[in-house]
Image (cartoon, rainbow, N blue to C red; front, side, top):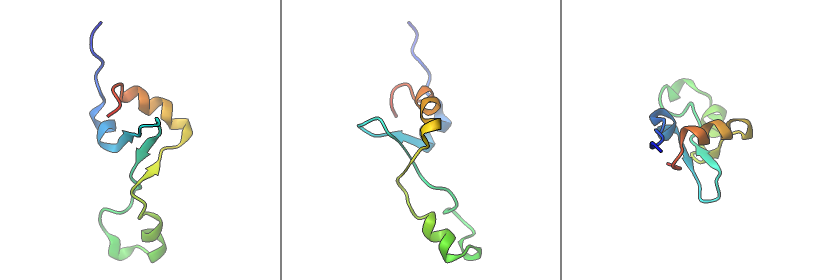
Length: 67
């Protein structure tokens, strides 16, 4: 059987934990921070958020070897 290809876009955005959860980084923290409120910056500060349950199956399909 042929090897499965990893979706590289997904590999850069998501990582699987040892327990099988899908970790992701929150958005809106890269640039233009001077224009954002303190509240926006604070809520986007979390670097290790988890993906929504409805998306997990699709993400795991894109990462067959658990990148």
